[in-house]
Length: 121
Image (cartoon, rainbow, N blue to C red; front, side, top):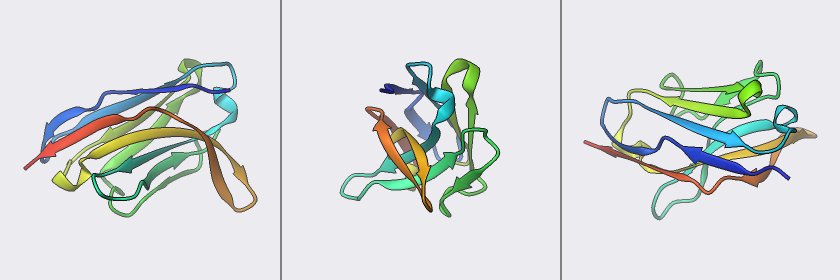
């Protein structure tokens, strides 16, 4: 079992920055790939970014590429999402997730409770 707790959300102005953190419980954090997802009101949850176990493989969705940076610190059982040049359309609840690479895709088994990010124009 992995329990995930996000923090760092809040209110930011367009063009500003926020840094989200997701701390995992347990000693198996370093064996999981980690991802960030978001869900805006009235929309489906969407992928934002992912990072492999080693941190060497990273991927981003097109809307955030070049603005967001995912990283992890396995010694601290924490994954981060640095969000720069924020836009109002980044407003959403952000979730972190832990998973494994299965076959040809990542499958996420554990999810945090989410943290609200609101970007004002």
